[in-house]
Length: 367
Image (cartoon, one colour):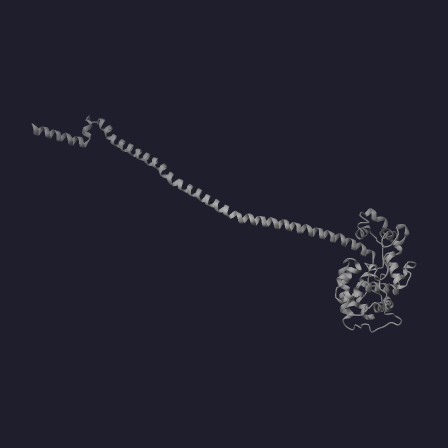
């Protein structure tokens, strides 16, 4: 059981006079409902500290100063700022509207929403929860709902729910997350709860006294709720639970869609692999055909080259022969021309002069 010093170190915001007034009721409730080990105590104190702002809020505060706060808390009920404005700074009107026709409450005109708003260190909310808890504790909470915010009933109601929901066993197993789930209906405020839990473990690790302290007149036979009567304890938990269900459905739908997409993708991959396995033979054939085409293209220029060059060579020969003929013809033309001295062209050519001389000599010898 936590001592005064230990509880003050875990809950520094709780004023000392209130801490001293609450501590006996806390220890008594933990004894009755077997919250009697260090893991159980740390989990119980942590969860109830979060739910009641370190035991400083025994009744639910529903005064909102801005319409945006209402829209954030109840988005379905206040979709626009205009719809939220009439409920700003009016907690009675707000409670009767948001809690109407839920959790055993009547309609907005019945006033049940405000009358049975959240109370205690685990915020007891709604006519039905007040009826169940009062019957188990032997207190008429329907006639006097404000009893639920007194220290004696507040800690007993929390202990009753704790044991009935099987949270001691979860604390023994170290399953703090599931404890949050059963209290909250979701994981709202999980980080803050864990912060208190770690602080409680750290403080209670040294000097913790188990079930040694006993309170006179406390019966060990604690009342327990039926499984059907146990559930998220407050109205906010119902909101969170509904949101969690919607989110879970969306996640499930997305998972199914993702799986279908994966299967389709896998089929496409298999089809691509199958087509790629068949493709190499066709590609090889195409490669052979293309290589033949390339070879034919390469051979063609070789055959065509001599044909193209041959005309060029013959043309060149003709040009050369023409040039030679022109050169041969040139002396004839020059021989026709007369020299300035009036000599015959033959006199100009040495070869003809020699031939003429030989003729003269031959004729002289004949004579």
